[in-house]
Image (cartoon, rainbow, N blue to C red; front, side, top):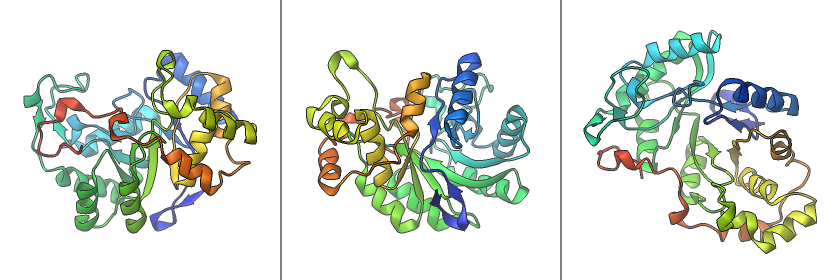
Length: 279
């Protein structure tokens, strides 16, 4: 367990749930629970809850209460601010902006202060950020009224390592969660490279692991919480089986050589012209 602000403890690894819905999602999550997972990353955007999305920045309490109702729970352990840009609200069913004009210049701090109130109401235990850049994270941290962000969720893997942002998180004692910890698979192109690299395969063989397990172990030893996603039972169990070995310094340094800014997957291009666009 990692220990966060206010003595919150959180598992070393979790499971992502993007696009996991219906019976497929239920089956995958049941398998994950049986395998030992206790951290699940869900979102309103994915139709499976617990992250504040851009259309609800001025409806924070209502959005959270609706999430609790759909989750059949009285509170949410950790509620994330998904993205700093606000979107024009039309209905809960229309989640994405239809044009650049739907990306608004609203100050995200107003939504953050409303999220702080959720903690005082007992609707959530802790609050965090997602996809905020260094300046935005520092700003939220500095002018939070009562409750600081305990986590920030962002893209991280050996191909896109975000090392400078990690330094800021350590300084502020904000825990980082890593989505896309295995990149995005394109087997026909042998991508991401760190999963097909011959030296990584040799490292994996040394520890009787897969290249994916080496990548996940890399994130953990960078003090991040990886949240890989899978619907396959064998992969779900393989992904959590990364605590019986440790990469040495040379192996960690080698994994860092795959970083390239061009490898970033989630750029939210539709919001690029907005003043709060984080990338």
